[in-house]
Length: 225
Image (cartoon, rainbow, N blue to C red; front, side, top):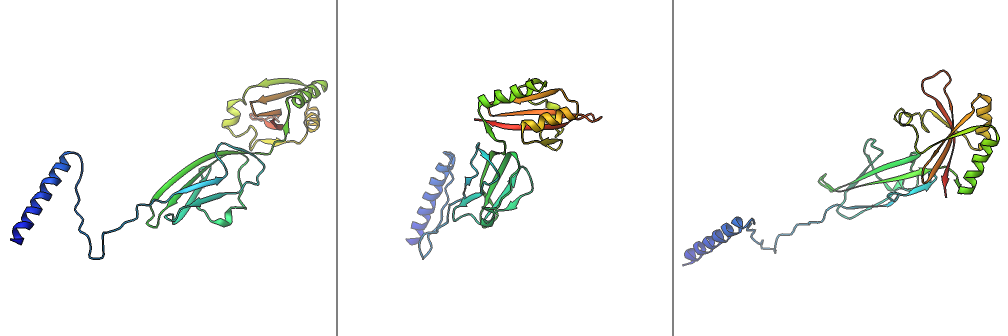
């Protein structure tokens, strides 16, 4: 009699499983253990980046790296600007060196089995340029013209300078004041200052070719307030 009941139960299970499979579901029979039902944690490793913030411009390098994770996270790995992956530790939080300009930070959360449970990427800007108003901007332009320097305005830096790393990068020298830029221009016989302006930044540049195909860019840069 018990054998007949077991056969009936198995037949019912088989019929129900077939119906669920046809309907697009998979039926899995898991017997309960003598100590109770089987348990498995479904929590995934997760991270949250508190600092830096996405799409924010910071005035200066003093920006902490602050990342938190849930209990399912065994290790946090980060990559800055596409560089090699590194392990995040709390010791990095207050002493982290960012790159001047736009930075891209990607952070991964790994569980104890080495699986990636979460990944986040943010972009932010480190800017050391002093802030000026529109009125101060016009005053700088007037100063250049009073020194018999012509100004050519550009909406954006020439593309070939950016691609070759010359504009405001390895092939550039940042000066501190408008007077320094004028002195440099007059010393080298430069009569034209290039103005590059966007909604947030402005740079005045004097280009020294020095018998080279690419100029060395001497500039002063500001953040518009």
